[in-house]
Image (cartoon, rainbow, N blue to C red; front, side, top):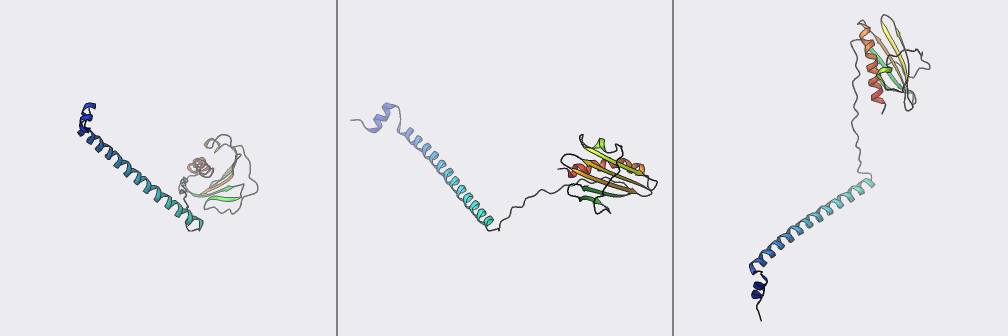
Length: 183
């Protein structure tokens, strides 16, 4: 009968090679067991934390109030005094005001066929606007309608500075307000 070493020599496997294979297998087993232990710990901690959060939420102690900050674009004005009132006609609420002295939506607006702000707004909007210019002031009123939104804009500009520059800012203001509030 042949010994174990002689049998392994005939097969071409030396005893030193078996020790090397055993060492490599033991290293693989150690890394696998470490990874499994780490995975088990992470799953245990994660499930415990999620159950704790659920319990706190059920008892009303944990609130998730995440909201993005509201960004507002600055409304461009000049050195004249501007009174800007921007109403949502569907809710009849004042949604933007700058020195506005109107507390409620006016009943009627004069509908002239001027196109002061129509080019600065998207196509498809129905814009009815009127403007009255006198030497100390400009009064601009518009009704901006779409299938989703219905807005009313009133701007009054007065002061001793030239009003021609202020007149040119009206489309920028209307566009800025429209894009800020039509979400």
